[in-house]
Image 1: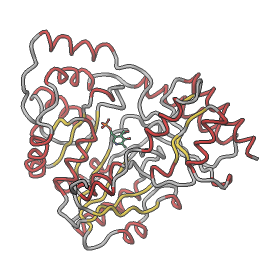
Image 2 (image 1 turned 90 degrees about the vertical axis):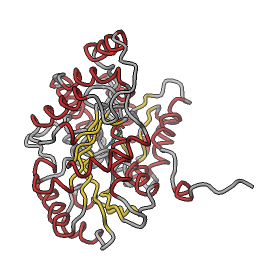
Image 3 (image 1 turned 90 degrees about the horizontal axis):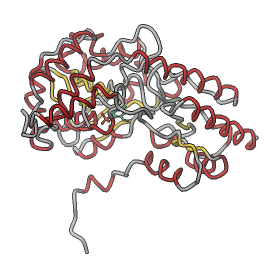
Length: 379
Ligand SMILES: Cc1ncc(COP(=O)(O)O)c(C=O)c1O
């Protein structure tokens, strides 16, 4: 007999995304389009900073919330995006993952509800459950992944403490339009609800006029929590660096979670962070845009419905016409077609699959050709 552990953990599942990536490895020659990370390596100029910092013995504990030079660089970077956060309103975290958990722990008391538009990144549910809150997922599929006032009102209750926004979104690549943001702002203002903005893909945008929630509604600053990451734009997923920016009153409390859980991120990575923020990612954006165009045109040629992704590096076509679950479709595609995608069910998007276009153009082309053959065979 084992002693009971935290009962909230019984409600969590390990990520199904990795399960399918592992399954792909079982099939020799299988092309994996499951990755949620750039196939490219971190640029040399960023990596070189680590060697310098190690040589300078930056191997001691840094300040908990990050070195002043990095928080200043982040503050200036955000100012260029139209976001006014002082260095004291920033915590450098172990990726957006820690930032999101810290945000949830700071906001939630037991029994609070978190409204999560779906399909979305599965972390939001687990961070809510672990904090003894209740995730309330509502489906944005009928409205092309935009948030309508009606759908939002139906999900919000007196216990709602926070809403999570992801724009551009994983897995759909959709950017929340003005009306969606306005619907959230109205409810947040009227009911006093926190808005946790997971904006990790904000630099990977292929449409004009992108505006984040934080930039659009500076008057809601005290209830807006902005999460960003070095992972996606600079190909730094393995570095585990991100940040949380929020009003000083929020940061004062969130700092306690960060301090007691993580303490600080490695000192010798922090100048590299400054270098990353100075990197021009326009060439990367252009490259992803070309891959996005390829994926969209090939999926449409296959006769699959999808909403065109305007950001991030994912598409989310419907496979409903084949009458099988997304897990079954993806499993068969691996073993019969030699290409791996991630089932939509892992994002609360059953009936869809997620090809990532973070792989190189050639790999993507081959993967899509194999998928087209498989889909033809199903008809
Ligand atoms: C929407 C979204 N938020 C957060 C993360 C986590 O990012 P990080 O590597 O910074 O922890 C991911 C990673 O896939 C993501 O897709």
